Image (cartoon, rainbow, N blue to C red; front, side, top):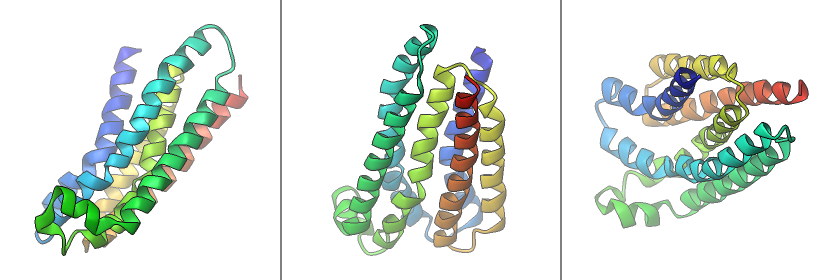
Length: 193
């Protein structure tokens, strides 16, 4: 059981950071801009990790007592979605402000990337919640779906990385597909209860 948890967390980590390895390997120009936008945009994942961290023990406890846990998932996804949207809208509206606070030397080149980066990472923020939920209710079959989504992301990033905006688009597309697949597996598991 602990090996499966380790695999799930590794896949989640790799899913969240594989793009930086591939960008460094395939693209030579603009990588500093991409990494700067990635660090700021990836903060969306950390917001939802806080929600998942609060949800996980509650889900585990409710599952151990034989109680229904779907309401905890629903609330977590709702709050996660709202938080992700708020952060993405903030990045979209004030990208230059964010870059000037943390990396003013990139204030001319990073804001256009940051405007879209936040939206590309919304699905991954919600994937965090679904992964921790499935771990909390001891359903491990989701790992196959997570692995398939990770492979899809790597394949798409290998095939379509002509520009930094292509990479960000592929992040959003592969994240959305992975989120839909993972949500389907999770909600099918809920109906079987």
